[in-house]
Image (tube, rainbow, N blue to C red):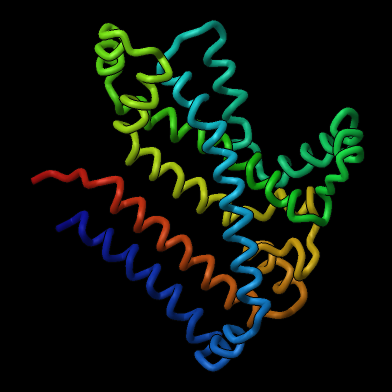
Length: 255
């Protein structure tokens, strides 16, 4: 009962926060902004850029996370520290580092030759989202594979299964739910990214303003109604994502 009081207080606080902002915006204003195409363009842009960044993060995170979970090698802790840097470093600093990376040789020459534009472009948004989320992805996938006992792989290998076969047919299916949870968390984190975008990509309304960035641009521009409406959708994405995580991740409680 004592601990339940804290849960009730937290839930009441969150509910009060959301309710007051809804009342402040007003239903009529919310419906007005909801009918504007710009609102849905921001939502669509956020969803598809975050989805691409998440796919790229999982493509890197699954093999790296598996390797860190299953093997021991020299300087492993140092390597893990470097991998975790984007998690600990402020996203704004990540944006500055990306700016320096893409403005110097060889990436500056490579992007110029290939005709790839990252500043004030959606390709830069995806790069920033990927850079910020890939470390989360590696950590989460590593934890996912650690939930699977390596004994299953050893048995499969002893029966003649190759390493790729053991990975795809044993480890990956057993870690499926945890990996799906990791994917959802990484996607939600990509949807929420904006600080690195501000310094690396730059904000252009209608081009690079994914939802969190649009909130900032609208607030600075004095468009509080737009900012609040977009914020509501950011909260909705977070709620749906975390609900999915809790549903798929299972339950742990004392009976």
